[in-house]
Image 1 (tube, rainbow, N blue to C red):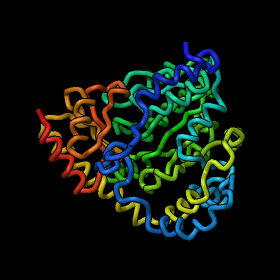
Image 2 (image 1 turned 180 degrees about the horizontal axis):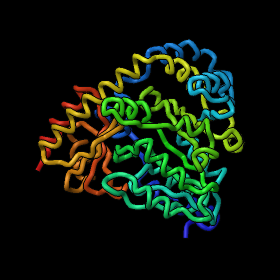
Image 3 (image 1 turned 45 degrees about the horizontal axis):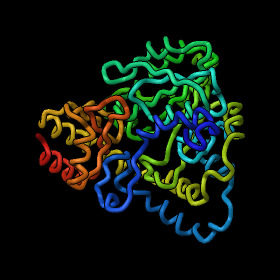
Image 4 (image 1 turned 30 degrees about the vertical axis):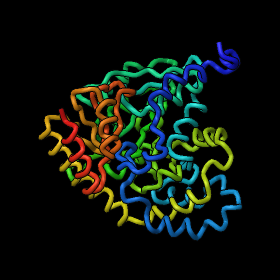
Length: 373
């Protein structure tokens, strides 16, 4: 028995199981790796965001606007919502934590799928609640099973769309049917962190990706269950290091969540960068266009090597390599490229590979061919 094991909360003791699969921390020589492990934008931030941060940096001695009013107004106008339906947070991960802190407690539960975003586990268990997970079906969500897992103690359903780490997407009509069956005491959290990539893929494939904003505007009276939509500046906008995202949802619920926020959680530089990045449509187009063409290229090349690649709607590929993924990831790191082994997600023979620039992808393919056995 350690000194503090009987003093800290049970969730704090139990969290060791979840941090074992938490994101990697890069130190020392790892910073020189080609980083295809965290789904970051290989083109970096918008040049307008960089310019805005440089201009704003002399004012960093002042605390930021705690309510992110200017950015919230711009997001509300862009999404045709009222400003009280927008909550800007320190990444969409903070929004997930706030929802759990606001709606969950010991004895209550949330529901999601297996092999999905690990932060759901961490955020739910941090407040002492339970997370009920259903098996994947054909590499994607089994929405019927998720619906069946909901009970009177369920308060949240998390749906990552596209899902991380599989890259699979649920089309809008299927989400419609699901929402109509979810009871009113449950809030559906539609996590659209990879929205821009999924929207681009869907347009190319001539399918409808998302009607999430219609759900938020209409509320539970139309779709059956209340919804909160999560968006992020970390992916297509290239601002992962600044930690800024936002939630869109019912004004009353977001007001409760806002009470739970840490003061000044969204930095001043993050706010000005996000404002500038919103208007740089060319930067987003570069990211999503490169992503869609390179996804085809990487899928074809990995398939030629005999690996099974799940068709993606995101900025990464989930690849079953048929052997221990941690060992493969270690060997690839020795070759100068970092990918994510999915052992912690319950997929021990799969890796997740961020879709990089053509040069980065060529480097990765040379490396995996070299270590292939």
